[in-house]
Length: 378
Ligand SMILES: Cc1cc2nc3c(=O)[nH]c(=O)nc-3n(C[C@H](O)[C@H](O)[C@H](O)COP(=O)(O)O)c2cc1C
Image 1 (cartoon, rainbow, N blue to C red):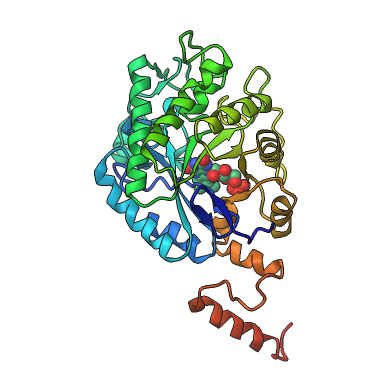
Image 2: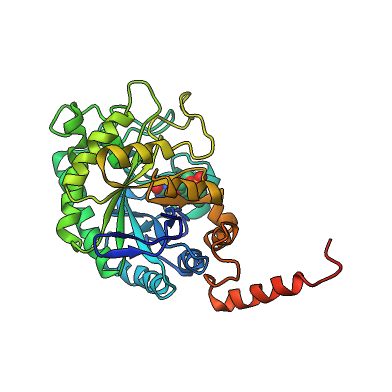
C-alpha cells in the first residue's frame, strides 16, 4: 500500500491517502461560504489531494467558535457548500465536511485577534457580538473565560438533532464523507473528557455516560446520512493531562463508535485543558501517529494520522507500514497546495507530471526537460 493507492470505505473510493485536514478560515458571514472558501479548498483539489475536508462547520448557530465560522444549521447554507463540492468532484477529489459544535469554546476571537472571548471591543471594531456558550458543566475553558451554561437534557436533544439535520444537509450539498469534530476541546470532547464534564446525570460520571452523547450523535447522523457514505470521528486520543482522557479510553470509545456505524477515527490529541500546552505533550514529527496505529490495530477500524507529518518519505512509510490508512495535513498544504503532487514526484511515482492537471503538468514537464539542457545552471 502506498500514499498514492486508492482506498475504499463503504461505496466511496478515495483516489489516494492524502487528506486536507479541516482548516478554519474564520471568513464566513452568518455561517455562509463565499469565494474565499471555494478558492481555498478548490486549490487543494488542483494540487492532487485525494480528499478535501471543509473546515469545522457549525451545526448550530451558538456552536460556532468565532463569528467567522462556517455553518450548516439552515437549508439556505447548502447552495454555497454545493458549489464547493461540485468543483472538488469535477477535479477528482472526494469532498468531506467536518461537522462541529464549539460548546464552551464558542464566542471566541479569531487566532490573530487573540483567541480570547469576544467582548464589546469586537462589537466596536468588527460589529461582532458575544453570545452564550453552552457546555456539559459550567466550567470555563480557561482562566478569564465566562462560565458556559450547563446544558439541560433538552439542550442535549437539540444538539443531537442538529447533528442529524446537518448530516442530511451535507448529503444534499454533495459531500461524500462526514467527519464529526470531537477533538481539540470542542463540545463532544468536553463531554467525554473528565476535565470538562462534571455532570451527574446519564451524560456524566462513568466513561460510558461521558461517551453517550457521541454515540447518540453518530446514530442521528447515520439515520440521516446514506449507508453508502462513510462517517469518521476526529478524537483527541489523549488529553495529555493526568486524570484526563487517555488512549485506553479512546480504544473503548472507538469500538463503540464502530458499532454505531462509524467507519474511521481521525486521531488527534489535546485541547481541552485551557490554553497552556500540557507538560506531557511533546511535539515532534508524527507525534500523534502512534494513536492512529494503536486504534487501527486494536479496534480494527480505519484511521487517519495527523500532526507534523510534512515529509513525503515519512508519510509513505506510515501508509506502507500500516500505521494509518490516511494522512491528513494542514499547515504544509498552506505552504504548498501542490504537496501531494510534489510528494509523488519526490517518491519517484510521477517523474513526468502525469498526475498533474495538464494545464500545469504539460508546462512543468517541458520546463524540466529544457532546464536539463541549459548550460548556465548553477
Ligand atoms: C489554519 C488552521 C485551521 C485549523 N482549523 C481546524 C478545524 O477547523 N478543525 C480541526 O479539527 N482542526 C483544525 N486545525 C488543525 C489541523 O486540522 C491539524 O490537525 C493540525 O494543524 C496538525 O496538522 P499539521 O501539523 O499538518 O498542521 C487547523 C489548523 C490550521 C493550521
